[in-house]
Image 1: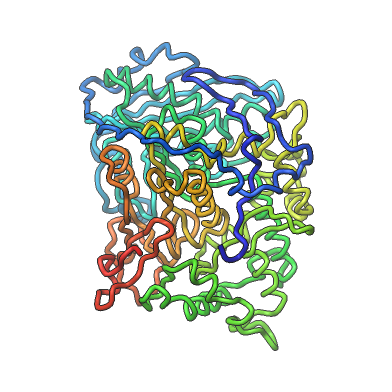
Image 2: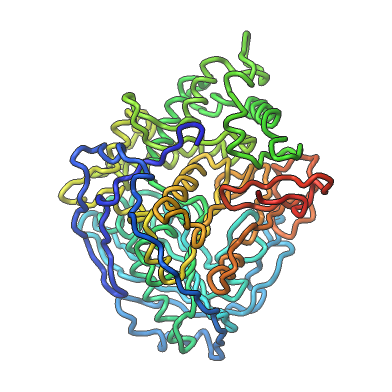
Length: 603
C-alpha cells in the first residue's frame, strides 16, 4: 500500500490467551513470552502473523427468536440476587419514549427522534474490591437495558476513550444515529470497564484495573449479562453481538479473539489496534507539529484551518474524479495516495503564511506524520495515514493538536508505562516530548508489580487467527473513517489483508472492512457518516447474507438525527453513498444522480 503502511505487532507467539472458560477470572496472569528487547515487537509486521490454519466450512447460524418479560422491572432485585461476584444496585422500568433515538439537542432538550420501547434498566457492579496498591475502591460498574419485547439477541456495548463512565446502554453507532441495538429490541450491556475515573487515567496505578480495562472486564461481565438475561426471559440469548467504536472497537476485536465462544457477530468501528503504540505515535506527531507551530502553547498553529482547507482542495483537485464523479468526495482512497503529492500539489510559501501555501518545514512535518511514526533507525512504530479531504474536520484537529497532550500523555504515562508515572505534578508537555523510542518502549515495559505489558493486555490475541469465531459461524464487520486522525484506516485494511492471507484468500467469507471516505474518528467530517451497520451484520450472521454495500447518508438540514455542520454547502442535505467493502470502491455510473447511492457501484 502507498505510504509504507505496515502495522507492527508482537508476533503471534508473543501473545497468550489469559482468560478461558465462562466463569474463570485470572487476577494477575502470567507474563506472556515477549521479545527480550523492549522494542523487539517493532521488528514484525502484521502480515507475518498468519497462523497458517486453513479455513473450514463454517456453520450457518440460525436466527434469534423473540421472547418477552411481563413482570415488574422494579421487582427484579430478588430474581437477580446471588449472581457470583455481582451486586445489583437498581432495577427500574423505563416507559416507552423515556429514551429517544435520533433527534437533536435544542436549548438543552431533545427535539424529534424515535421513541424506544419500554424496557427494564438494571444497574450493578461486578468484582468490587479495594486496591492493595493505591487503596482506592474499584469495581466494574454496568448498566443493562432489557426490552419488555425482546428480539432474542444480546449486544455488549464497548465504550470509547479510557472508559471510566457507564454510558447509556443503547448500542448506537454512526454519525447522528437514528437506530441502534436497544431501539431494535436487543438486550444491551454497557460498563465502565473497571475504571471509575470518568475518562481519567488514574486507574492505571492498579495492576488489576489495567487488565480489566484491557480485556478482563469483558470476561467478567459477559457471563453475568447472560445469567441476567436467562433469569429475566427464561432463556439465554440466541445470538450475541459485541460492538463499539475507537476503544470500543478495540474491545470488540479483543472479544473476537479472547471470547469467541460467547459472541456471534463483531461490529468494530475504528478499532484501536496496538493502542499503546498509536498513543506513542500521537505524541511523536505532537513533537513534529511543535517544531512548526507559531504559538508553542497552541499546536493548531502548526497547520491552521485555512491551511487544511487549502490542502483539502489540492487533494480534491487530484483525486475527486478518480471514482468517475466530481462530487467533493474521494472514494478511490488507494488511487489518491498515488495521485496526490504534498510536495508537488500544494504551493510552497515564498513569503508569510497566509493560508494559501505551506512552508517547506510544514510540508516536511505533515508529510512525515502522514507516512507514520518511525524510529531514527527506520523501524516503524505505527502505520501511515491516507491523504483525504476530511482533514478539515474539527474532530481531525482535536486528535492531532489537543488530545495528544490532553489524553495520550496520560494514557501512556499511567496505563501503558510500567511503573506508571506519579500524577501529582505530572508535566504532560515534558512527557509528550520524550523520544519516540522511549515512548514506544513503554508498550512492553513490565515490573514485578505490573507483570503484564500493555501490548499484551490491550490487544487482540493473534488478530489474524479468528478461526474460533469463524468456525462457529461468527462474522466480523469493521467500519473506519478514512480521515481518522488517531487510528489509521490503514491499520484495519492491513489487518484484513493479513487475515485474508492467513485464510488462503477467503477472509471475506466472515470478515469485511468498510472504509468511510471523508469521515474522521467514528463520525463527522465531509462525509456520509450516518448508517446502520448492525442490521447488515445481523443478516450476515443469522441469514448468511453477506453485506455487499452499506447505504450511508449525509446529515444536512432535515435529517432525523443530529446535524453535521461540516458538510459542504453544495451537497444535497440528504446525499447518500454506498460504503463498499475493501478492496472495492464506489464508482459512479455515468448518467446517474450524483446525490444518490444508487448511482454508484461497488467495483
